Image 1 (spheres, rainbow, N blue to C red):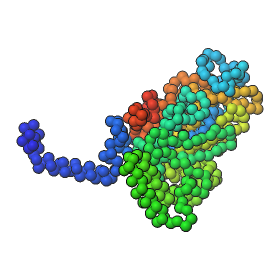
Image 2: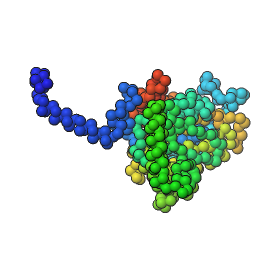
Image 3: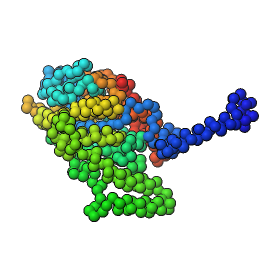
Length: 484
């Protein structure tokens, strides 16, 4: 070997080679101890990386998604369209509507009367971002957020739109966004799940949420979102039954693991090992969860910032504060669902109440993360499954109006985690009906979110039924205009 090295022109002898190789073996051994999945090799794809690795340097480490379930109107929040007030009760021009599909709720309307927001708008921050008067606290943080006005989707009804936004497909049995991130990156805290789900309900008309929105789909069940409840026990069945100690639970799990290992040797089902991991996670969570979910020790100025509702479990404010604590503790993806934004009628009465429920706590979360030095590494997302029409659904009156579903364009905002701060991205036409500049499809948004987390959306794949699946299916482009 030494002769071959020398003849090749490389100045390497046997002693030098073995010395260098020894260092390499030692590094590999150390790496496998520090990162157990280093040498696992993924699930067989040439594009997959071992758990916990990124394709490139990430800008964000964690995500908090404040999902406004039911679709808040962009025309009463962040997309100011004064022309709609000037053209009150006039029909939407056919040249603007085009061949846009409408829902069955308005398909038979004889007219499509335009209606502008009954709430005022003002410009805020150095960028002059337009914000509705019903969001006074979010208005104060406009220099920290990026408002995207051109989100669009194909889904026009709630169930497929919700499923599409969360999983990248309108059909079921696809992994949710949080599950993909759990699969790709794992958790920063081995005592807590990588993906947690928090639910709250506002004072408006609510659309239901269901477990398929945080499902692991065809990924291992360890990647499914863990739902927290609003009760005294944030995670049901986590505590030991009366009369049983922690030592009893440890012995039971050890015996159960032995039985499961026997089953694995007989059947070879990898889901058996997943179940063992879940039992072990639940055991570790018995110690970690009570501490991280205890908000009674938060200082008075934090409670004041979020509002007194933050001390009431299950409220939006409480979930925002809990999301900060979970994220701070290393949870990779925290998903909030706040129901009540489905204003087909009574929008003028209901939407201010919904805004009041979320405005203060949403702004407080950004301020809280920023004060703690966590905003730069935490990506916060705010928005719903689609937008609202510029015309009234049903009868239009001076006192009230409603808006139907509108998938062609709507607004969301993002903050922290490598996103440009203090900008508005994209433009819609003067009717707020079509996109005229910088469209952002749901697939594009997903690709950008993964990019901010250091993942290439085309390489984060999983082979299932002979095909390599990904969150963005066969679509999606990263949006560089919103990345800092």
